[in-house]
Length: 178
Image 1 (cartoon, helix red, strand yellow):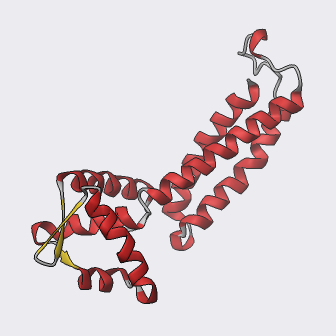
Image 2 (tube, helix red, strand yellow):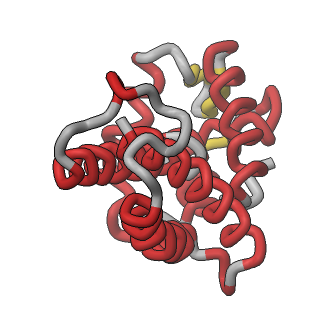
């Protein structure tokens, strides 16, 4: 249980470090800032595990793991999974293509944007057909976008996702996005 408690503590510290690094880091490259925060907190997790008592001064005896190595590995695994899930969330949500597209369409207002406008805005280059051929039909089928008169606009569901994405982007400084 000590490993789990320390994993949760260091994950909260990791989150704070990531947000700070994204705000002040050079070039604000999200993946580099993420790795820097993880690289800094991982050895600190290990150090805190070996330098604290098995009960952390607060855990009852029934919550203590009998083997320190198992407790350490358990906590390390939980910490790594928390960090990995956070990164997946960030890239699927506020930094993902679909969410960014919805934020851009929200900024465009009721008139929406044409596919050509979106290609120019996102500078998709050679991979345009692969991206737009799969993503936009999926977003239309999912009820996030409407296509009328050659322009794409957001549905109410798409506006909600765009608003949440914009808030998350501002929180972690992951681009302008509105």
